[in-house]
Image (cartoon, rainbow, N blue to C red; front, top):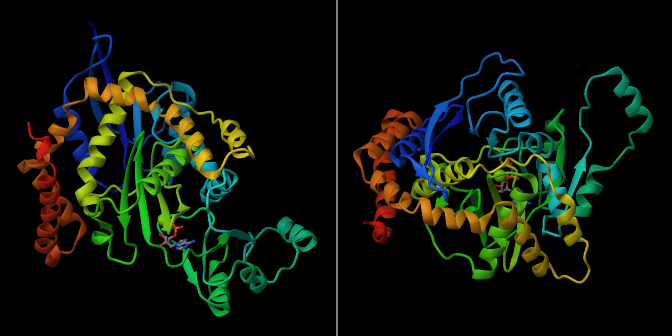
Length: 415
Ligand SMILES: Nc1ncnc2c1ncn2[C@@H]1O[C@H](COP(=O)(O)OP(=O)(O)O)[C@@H](O)[C@H]1O
Ligand SMILES: [Mg+2]
């Protein structure tokens, strides 16, 4: 029996809620044993940004990143530690940089998923560069924006090809909207996408490793009410499809902490947004689902470092495309085949076994913590940091109510 130590790095932006939750739970978890009986001690540290020698050796075994999508220094640091030091990263910084929303659309269309028809339109204002002006004059074909929109049909969505956080997204109902939005797009490259009208459910699924929570999302409501606390809102088949799509996107791109948006209309599941390098896990957004997210993040991080899971920087797109290209398989058959590859990537069976053997106490531990004064302090601090003073009392009561609901829904977890 030997002791092994692991350091988990948190690369953070403005948020303090889930990092505090994660740090607390990791501390409370204590040492974890592996199948060989060795004991693993885990600690977390917040990563700071500073000059780094490309040959220096980081202390971290795993890093949870929430920053690199926006800033170059942490992004390049992540690429260095991934490329040189085998530090485990939940999302591959390489595919997240190069495979933005546009590429994810292409990949999932190739796999036969029901992504709405989408057109990439050239820039309204191309980059200001003398060579480009020459090239554009010579090779850019004039095009009729109305005609492009006409082939898709109104209403449609105009949105950045690499977007996130609803920035620059507009719903286009007619030609006037179209020209106004295109003129405003400026130097931002845009997609036009058919709108999925009259959908029954907006399913937002958060995946952390091989765990996925599918939540009913209501984008029209204010942030604190968007995630509905509702269960069984999808049929078993549709639920399987939504989970499978989320896991397949993630396994395909090597993303392990990502959210996926699908619009369900009848029995059709249409994925619209599934490249979110920094998915929303705020206590004030997820509320009821926050304890699950923290437990899953803890379990998957611990699993990766304790079992020595090797990060995969390569992708195996060909294996997916070989399934996609088969003519003897139906859409449903293909989903099952993709799911097999995704489960294999995530070591789903081994993970389930590991959790049962070595992390069986995590649910009870999280349950005890959520009922403790420490969690209530976190909740109050988070509300105070998020809302203006005159709304504090109202929102503290609101979120306490949702957390109580979670506590009462889980009496089976009490030991
Ligand atoms: N094809 C579509 N059909 C219906 N609604 C859509 C479609 N595309 C986007 N939306 C709406 O616009 C919102 C933002 O678009 P999305 O693609 O998710 O961009 P972002 O990456 O900025 O979140 C979605 O959450 C959804 O409410
Ligand atoms: Mg979105």
